[in-house]
Amino acid sequence: MADTSLLSGLDLTVWQRSFWREYVRDSGFAPYMGASPMDIIHVMNDLKTDGYTIRLPLVARLQSSGVSGNTALSGAEEALDQYYMDIAWEYYRNAVRLSKKERKKSAPDLLEVVRPLLKEWSSELIKYQLIGAFHQCEGVNYSAASSTNKNNWTANNQDRVLFGVTQSNYSATHATGLGTVDSTNDKLSTTMASVARLMARTARPQVRPFKTGTQGREYYVMFCHPLCFRDLKLDTAMVNANRDARAREANGMDSNPLFQDGDLIYDGIIFREIPEFYRARQGTGTNSDTHIVGVGASSIDVGANFLCGAQALGMVNKQAPLPTTREDKDYNFVDGIGIELAHGIKKVVWSNNSGGSNNNKDLGMVTVYASAVA
Image 1 (spheres, one colour):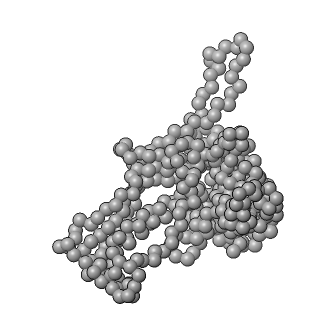
Image 2 (tube, rainbow, N blue to C red):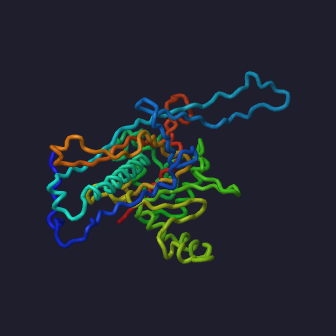
Image 3 (cartoon, rainbow, N blue to C red):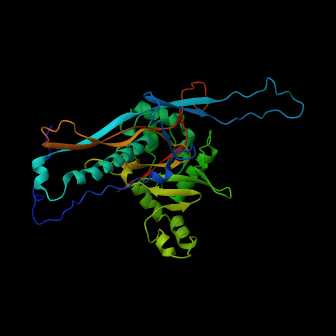
């Protein structure tokens, strides 16, 4: 354990009285997180209840025909198709320690600089944990999942896993399915997205839309790998839709993605680019939870994309981020400032009912694999 030494060049000289902090992107998931079961990321605030796990009950829709006319209902009742899943929470902490000497050498107040950095650290931690949860196989993040985990997940989710542009690419052997994705036909496109949307609507149980408009329109959100999103923007149908069909009122150029960055909308799907699907949180490598290297046809890289409806992920918020300070100050010479939070994040799955027809299926998403050639 060592004190943080002031970086050479930042001591008290003619220098700006502020730090340039590394830019950390705001979460692309924030608009889709909330306490409602209709939110894509269902946040359960459980700040007082004791217990290490929070149990989320799940009940499938009623499917019997019921009775009509004079037919007796007694004895013809329908049994509930019941499931549940547990989300365990954990504490997460980080801190920075500074001696009085290093603080006095510096023009800016280093502790004031640390506070927003810790806040950004906690936000980025949650963001990457959400990304990992999207691609869990049998409750295990993709990068840590075994071939057995991946094969079992693929077999259980045949109606909600899409390898490339056509459902005929499906294989219960996960690696075989990935091997069908090529760099010509299987770039993310409006055609591929429409197939995924149809799968969501026809899957059993159906992937519920996260939002229904006032006129009965249903919307899904596809969180996209940035290289796949790049290909989608170049898709002819998407270009034509943005050129010919988007509204031009007011400052139309400011909102048209042909000219500005932002979400795309097509066929009832909101497409949102998540750059962190490509880059790892630390270092310069790729994110192995969502960017799969060398597994496609001709050894191309494959990107994971997620068409989501309601309750795709569950998050238990056990303790909101709390600022902390160091008790042992070494005779008031050492200061430390930290942050502490507690939460759990998991993909929501119809689970814990071995006799249920939906057991081990993802509740709120269709996973779409597309070419991710840099």
